[in-house]
Image (cartoon, rainbow, N blue to C red):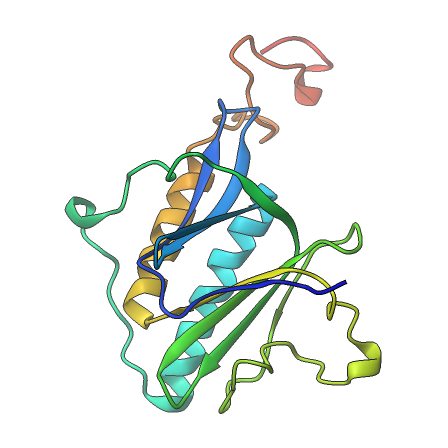
Length: 200
């Protein structure tokens, strides 16, 4: 079966966003460009981990290649708009791959369709990468993702910083944590294990 690569190099817009109420949200990565909008679903923890790994990638690119690090965007220029509608899930993400392309000074992100239940984020070494070597392992025999759909975006460091900032705000906008146990609070409270199961 032929896989599809939805490439946006660069996208007009690339954001993390959600559909639904806190406690029942579905997380998406959405890319827009060239008259196309592609949305892929993923888990909250994947969005959080993606933001963290992108931050590490920018820091490493600065350390090794002297790439200037963009400052966090001012609140006035944050992209706080909702996802473009309709939000049609293209596929569910299983693996996220990251790379830094030294030639173009851009960050490459690949969201690969879930082929197995486990989710992972892999960052390839910071070196001269082309579009086909975003993953760590280039051995075709060990590459299970050849027949899986993928979303690929190429971002400037500034666009990467904007994505990180929004992704962190989206993750933090969910249910507030219980001050005692850290688990999310439902509107009606929750059974706190620190209170022997009494409602908080």
